[in-house]
Image (cartoon, rainbow, N blue to C red; front, side):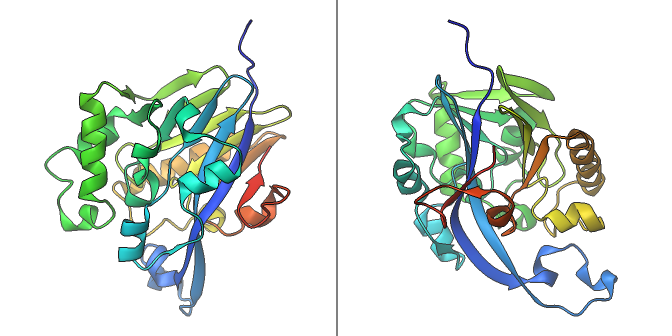
Length: 264
């Protein structure tokens, strides 16, 4: 039986915080605007069909989130089970990048293949990951888990544009981190583009406002151009990585309206 090439895509909101606009937009003072509060939500994404379940990122854990003052709404493994997902049956976990809020629960998936850009893995296991401007966004314990999974031959490294499975493509864009990935998912009537942290907020794209934490600024701008290209045609849906607007743009999952939305 041929694998179904269309999927359902969900965004799951597991955490939140309130911060200031000057903390999230690079060189915010250049825009001549008064600083003001802004919400930041934390998500992971589920891509599934009758054959497989793929999780895109897996959130922060209670220790790393608590240490940074983040509000945990529902621990990601618990959120998955609430939505009928057994982490033990997840086939792939796509790590879009290795920041603490995206790889904090890798040990919850005992059999999944872990998929990450080779450039991303090389950076976080290389000599510059410990520099303060990078290290503050990562957790040594999480990177140690990633290293262990590599040693156990459970990590697949990708480069450029890769088909993960029919209907799911990974595109390496860099920018926010050296190997930041975007995930494109073929759903029944649409193409869903999960930007993850290639686009934290929709206004980054609308107003050309890069996020504050960036490894390669020209690559981040090029990533914005790619996201525009990917979503220019009708039936293309763009999902930002941390924008509270995600919970309003898409359809709430019945019974779990504050936890998850169905993108397509």
